[in-house]
Image: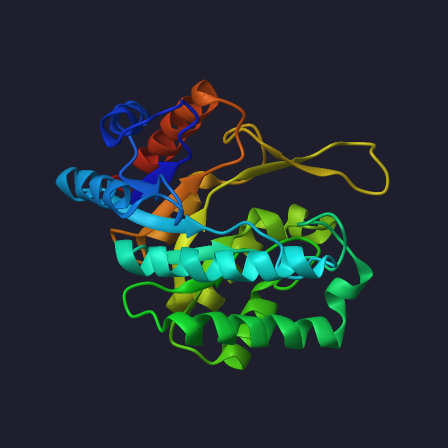
Length: 279
């Protein structure tokens, strides 16, 4: 498998960026500039990636396509097109976003997130994005979230059927779907179920750890530094390796460079103990 994550230290050139990537020991990366970068800048980063046997695991969007502010939603759609085009240009495994929230908080819960109309909009917008770009070297994917579609492997599989596009794929974030006590308590079985159900479609993985705060009512499940929660991340690396030796596994949502260094070291350690080779 390939290990990657964010680069938190600043950089102004491919050479500066590569120093940080090597220090972290990554073999897969999120593309380090967005679609607004000049063509020559994108080309320079891509050449650096090729020369150093790195894999572009994802190009992020991270905009709310369903913002109640129409101008914001329209701008998000236009940016999604450009980012999917960038992912196609650089041959990323996927261009990834969340489906979007109907409320003011771009990635938060809103009652309308689960309406029939919203689900139909997600399917239609996803089709529209893919059909506009017609990617052949990349895919478009939605990161699961605890309070919007898709929030379960079954929900994701149904969405794959409804979108009905070869270029629609799974960016698996199992931690985001651990949104209740039952999944938390039986997290190992739940994670295996995610891989079993979605494995033909998985192109990128977020490997995160979670911990429940005892006594917080009604329920508080938080992301924590890998190794400080209840997830067997060694087993996660085995499940990832079964998908292919180049599957990208990312650590994320950590506060600083040192935390990413520790997370990457932990993932390499548990992978080694599980008999998994990390490139």
